[in-house]
Image (tube, rainbow, N blue to C red; front, side, top):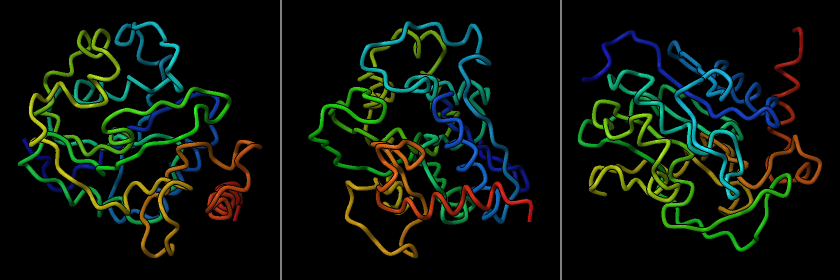
Length: 231
């Protein structure tokens, strides 16, 4: 079932206390550029209660590595929703992403061929490489077609099965989004800002000392300053 006209754009953002400022800046960047009403929900483990009981895996780098797959359940498997990692900065109108919903698909993503060479990333977290890496960092979810993602499945399936979308059973159900909606900073070739809609600081954002000089750091810092400004 599609969402009726006028319903807010439902956005769920991965939340990790170590990146709280990243969530706040991302939320600001979305809200100040959108042309449509939005509903923003942080996926905090402390608020998910009994819905998330799987033990933390040694390769799990954030609190929301797996909770993202609860979004269709949290929407009662009705309508559409967007999931985004928190380490992002939206430069365009999120309504333009919402307008790309296509009923032919269960999920739509930017289909990266991301193969990092390093073995660690921010806060010395492990870096891993696998098929469809970073596809799940921005997802446009057709919730009614994601009914396999029950809490039981999300808590017991392997990380690879979740992030490689094995729960769909058919890769033809994965639609492609324009690359501009998930630009991997310092992995993808640098582009002019007007060609980008969403920056993803996947290896570490400028809110970490080790990445304060990453590409596009000035844009993130300027957004933070605007958020903090009383004017």
